Image 1: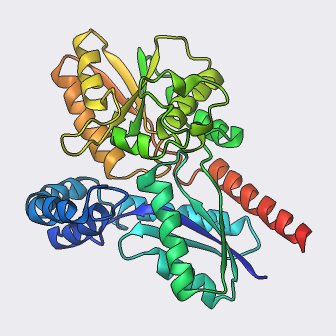
Image 2: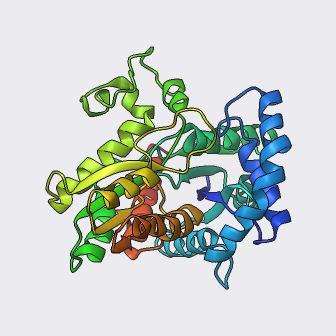
Length: 345
C-alpha cells in the first residue's frame, strides 16, 4: 500500500470579511461535538442568535491578528507541513476541520497521489470531543463515502509523549530564561464540564472535583481532557524545575451559561493582578499553532485585563508552531509508523 500523512488543525475563515467569518463560525458551531445540544436547540442558538451578533465582533478580532500572508493558523500550519514533508519520504497533506481547506480536500489530494493508507495526525496534544474526536469521526465518514479503498489510522493524544513535552518545555524555557516573572500560567482551551462526563468511559467515576485527574491508572484518563491538561502542566513544570506556587493551570474561551472547566483564565489573570502579581507569563499548550485564541484573546485581551488591575509585565509565550524540533518530532512519529507498517508487510 502507498502511504501518506494528513496533518489536521482547527481551521480559519478565508478572510476577515464578516461574511467569511459568519460562514466559518456557522460550520464550526453547528458541529454537534462542539455545541452538543439537540439539533433544534443548536439551530436556534447558532443561526438564530450567535450568527446574527458575533461575526462582526469576531471579524474585528481577526483583523487585529491577520498576517499579510493570511490567517496565522493556516500560514503556520503550512510551514509545519513543509518541514515535516522535507523530513519524510511519503506525501504529507494538510487539512482543517472547518473552513475551505477541509478534510475531504486533504484526503482527495493524497488519493490523487496514489495514497491508499493514511496516517491522520490531529494537531491537538490533548483529546477532546470538540477537537480530536470530531476530526476522526468526520474522516471516517468521508472515507466510507468517498474513499472506500483507503485505510485510515491516527496518532492518539500525545500530551504525555516525552518528545512533545521536551519541545514544549524548550519553547517555554527559551522565552523565560532571562525573564524576571513571578507566575507562569498554563492556559488551555476550555470545554463544558458535560464534555468531560460524555467522554468518561469509567461509568461515571469522574466526579469533576479535580482529584481523579492525578490518580495513576484511571481508565478514563485516555479520553479525559481535563486530566490531560493537568498532566501536561505537571510534566512541563517538572522538566523546567518550576517551584510550587509559581505556576498554575486555567481554561479560556468559554461560551454560553453552562459550567465550563475552571478556573477561568480571564478571572485568574484578574485575580493575580489584584493580589499583587506584577509580572506574569502565560503559555497556551492546548494549541500547537498561534491563532485567534492565543494572539488576540490572550496576548491582547489578557494583557489588557492584567494592566487594568495593576499588573505591569505580561509575557505571552508563542505556541510551538513550526519549530524545527517540533517538525523533527512529527517526522519521527511518521517514520516510525512507516517502519512498523513496512515490517508487517
